[in-house]
Length: 167
Image (tube, rainbow, N blue to C red; front, top):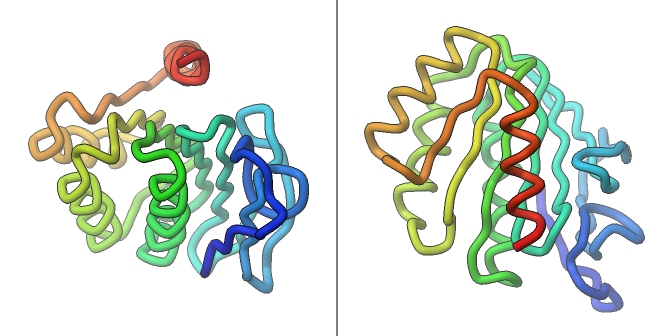
């Protein structure tokens, strides 16, 4: 998937397609939904459904339902890199509360992206319910340290995202 900035786009306040920030996703199975209060692009991938949005120029918000996959991670990274190019640094909020598990390669690539971009990725927040995802967050914290925060409850996750948006 390629995230392409439209030349007529204004400030980055949301995501894909149309009025939500100027990023257009080229994907045949894409539709528009709401995420974090803004328009988001929903991608029906092989193992999961991925929603991506930028509720503020420096915030990447995602929601995943199903099994975390390399295809999902590649889309997140491409979108994140586009946000970083515009904002300089970003905060990431992954709603993985409906993720049943993940492919080991997907976790490795996503964590490696964080490790390789410590100045560009200020912090990553992950909401989870699955014990498998909780274990993955715990393992990733060993490499990412304070850059990664896990949540098992929506109110704390939403409060962190709201605080980041006020920045």
